[in-house]
Structures are given as C-alpha cells and as structure tokens.
Amino acid sequence: MRQTIDITEAGLKPPARLAEVTLDGSDTGPEYGSECIKGNVIICPGGAYRWHSPREALPVAKAFAAQGWKPWILYYTVSVHGETLGTAPLCQAAGAVRRVRAASPGRPVILCGFSAGGHVAASLGVHWNDECLFAGEDRSVIRPDGLILGYPVITAGKYAHRESMEMLAGPDPAAAEGNLAGPGYYGLEAHVDAQTPPAFIWHTAGDSTVAVQNSLCFAESLAAKGVPFEMHIYPYGEHGLSLATMEVEEPEKHRYADAHVAGWFEQCVQWLDLVFPNPHDPA
Image 1 (cartoon, rainbow, N blue to C red):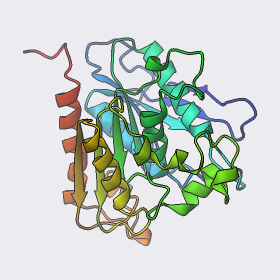
Image 2: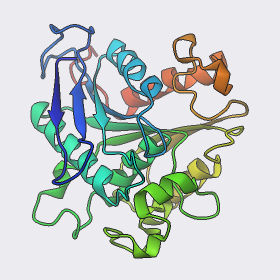
Image 3: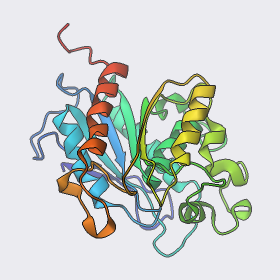
C-alpha cells in the first residue's frame, strides 16, 4: 500500500481510513492517469459493522489490480463497543469517492462491498443525492459510477441482518440520532431511484447469515426503476465467501473454495468492461 488517508468525520472513533493499494503490490505501481488503469474500485470489507474482514480486503484488491483496476480499501468506522454509527459509514464512503475522483479525474469510481460493506456501498448508491445529508456540495461528485455487491446487507424488514441494523440505528431505530428518514432509512431497497448507479450483485441461496432476499429485493427495486444490473445467485455456499478461492478459504466457518462461486469475479470483470469500456483499449 502506498498511503492511507484519514477521512474520519469529527468525533468518531476508531478512525476511518482510505488505503491506496498499488497495482503491483509495491510502492512503484502505475501513477494516477496511466493509460493502463481502467478505473478505480473502492473496496468496503464486511464485518457486521463491528470489524473489517481481512479476507474481503487485500485479496480482493489484488484481484482487481491484476485486471487493471486501481484498488482502494475503505476502512469505515465500525462499532467496537456497541456505539450507534448512524450515517457515519455512509458519509465516509462519500468522502472516499470524492477523494478518489479528485485523484483520478475522468476515470470511473466503483464501490465494491461485501456483507455490511455491501450496505455501505449500496447506501451511497441510493442516498448520494440526499439534500439534507450532503447539503452545500456538488453531490454528483460523490455518486459512485457503479456498485459491486457481494452478499450485501440491504433490507431493514423481514429479512434484515439485525446485528448490522442495530449497529447503525441502535436497538430502537426510530429513536436513533442521524436516522434522517425515519426507521426505513437503512432499508435500501425503498430508496432506489432512476439515478441509482448500475450494479453487479452476487449471493448464495445457502447463505444462513444474510438471507438471499436482501439481494433479490434490491434487484427488484433496480428493475422497477430501470437501473441496469447483473445478478448471480449461486445455489450453495455459506456467507462470507469473498473470492471463494483457496487463498481466502476458511474451513472452520464452512467457507470453502468453490470454483463455481469463484466465477463471480470473472463475470464481474466482464461486466465492468462492458459498462465502463476503457477508451484507451485498442479497437
């Protein structure tokens, strides 16, 4: 990693960090604007808004780097001692997009999140134009160009991941400070509109932690609003598979390498190339 940038909002502990990852894993990777860089991917690892899964951070960054996408990792503020986070992770994601866009003008900025990190990414995808939260700034700058969502936390309803929702809104969501639109603010499927960025979504039907209905309801909302998306639902596999390769295998938690599920990454790269073609690629 070349540098880390503190993007913590005032008073939040622990701090939020945006880590820049070089394309070749050293300190001499291609600079911003190099024609070999297709765009930027900001990775938001999961962890129920309590921690950041390392399996969903650097291994994913290296995989995107190998495909010509400049990787960044957003270590957004998490609730270590049960603190209510409110909209802090959302605001930090906006700050990350703003900084990366300034550093890489003219290149797409994609948010990629897993589990709770998927909620961070999708939150900015649906709330980037919130006039109250982002008053007084050019909100088009913080709109991600695309979303990559792996087994994301989405809904606050019947199929909600309750632990994540409580970290954001507290045990009583209606009373939570920063809950700008009432109890449903963190139920993201209700806030999709025609300006929500295009999305690539994947999940496993066998996920016993974050129900597959989270992805299904988000896709249904995207379809209803005419937002382009690609979705892959794999029949088997536990929650938290990350790349589903040997490198990130975690047998003690029933997270096994799976060549079929691992195909999501190649499909995702093809989706990126389709939706965000590199103008410097030879015709």
